[in-house]
Picture 1 (cartoon, rainbow, N blue to C red):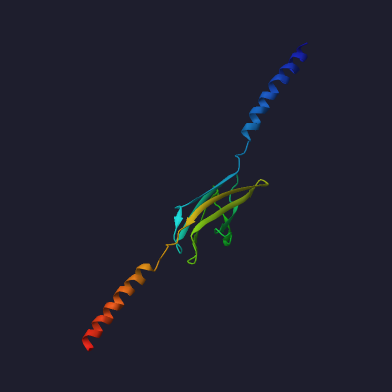
Picture 2: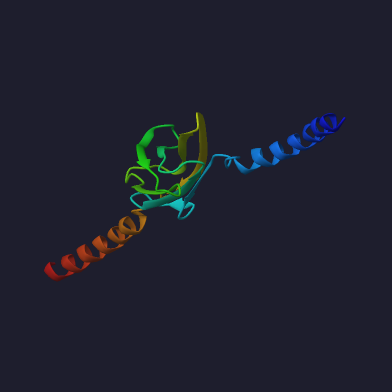
Length: 152
């Protein structure tokens, strides 16, 4: 009878012990986050991108940047540090048009691919040379008027 009680006790206590063990070995859910230093950029400006990947040490992170027309602007693979932190910088092309740029960061962790997208905006001034054109349009007639009145 004593042996039967021992088996009964073990059959009741072992599941509780195993439940505690499984949680102690549970790994953190892999996730990736990326952040740009600001949300809007002018053509030619530098974007500072940083991020963190949880679930693995020294992971490789694929970075891809596309413009609003889905043209590939940047594709790079970088290695994160021991804590999963990574950073990269790139320039908005000087010929960029106004619109949204999509930044994707992805990595493979324990057989799973984790991805996050971040959207930034490129703003091109509507009339970047309008002030110069206006100044020339006003100054040239004044110069010609003064030159003409001196010689005639």
